[in-house]
Amino acid sequence: MPYTLKTPVHSELLIRKSRFIACVQPIDDRARAVAVVAELRAQHPGATHVCWALLAGGQSAAVDDGEPGGTAGRPMMDVLRHQDLDGVLATVVRYFGGVKLGAGGLLRAYTDAVAQALLGADKVPLQRLKALRCCVPYALEGFMRREIHSAGFELIDAAHGSVVTLHFSGPETQVAALMSRVNDAGQGHVQWMGPAD
Image 1 (tube, rainbow, N blue to C red):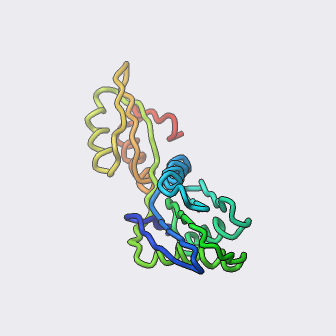
Image 2 (image 1 turned 90 degrees about the vertical axis):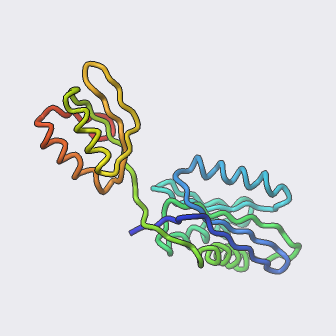
């Protein structure tokens, strides 16, 4: 079972005068990860490198940011995978201290920075969300709202036309049970559309 982090975790290592500032944090997608990396660059204008690794529901990335290929992003990602994490972004800001570490030294430094941050991490099971959309007659709207709420789903939107169109999302593991209950009670009057197809 994959896990994510409850809160961001940090570490800082000093290796042969180079400073490595690591953070591993929960994150949903690549767009948010890119924004976080841009924020780090702005906060650390004197940093030599801002390397990162992302695992977020199939949106993965391993970025060396100028370090020799395969010495930063990939080792960071390996640590995340080894810890069975998903929905996380690992970043390491490096301030070069004037002493070259070599490929092996860089690989160890980036691996250790992320691993050290994760030592005190509070891991929680990753719960993937799924969006659903359905149309129901007005007579079933109250029933649907109760079912959505009781299944732990969140109602995103309700549009009222000739029928009521409900858009909601919730735990992927609960989708089949919810759809089955709704279909049984709706007796053919619930029409699933969009992401639920």
